[in-house]
Image (tube, rainbow, N blue to C red; front, side, top):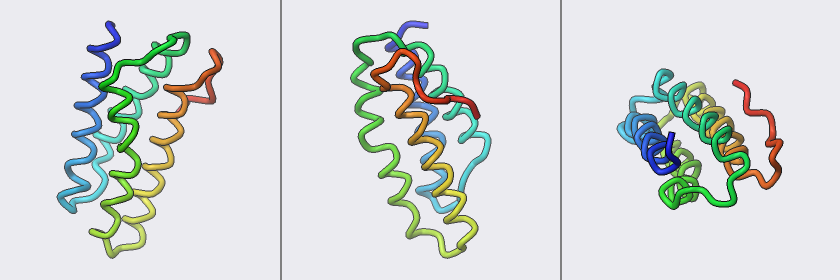
Length: 109
């Protein structure tokens, strides 16, 4: 898949994950799974790339802070922990997408 098309699909997956969080409805596990799947695919596709699409870089700058910014909406500790765990998983996958080594960190589930 072309890098820019892949980045566009990644952005859609991120929006699909973030919208329910921002609405206060919690983690949509299906959307989280799709976002993680897209991040893994990007990490594989961009493993040897010198550059990544600007659209993806723009997303990466605010993705995890945007997730953390929703925590104030949730009083339930379990839900807050679920969101924090999702953010940690996503952050690790983002790191794999921009790794400078051609053998990036573990990108398994």
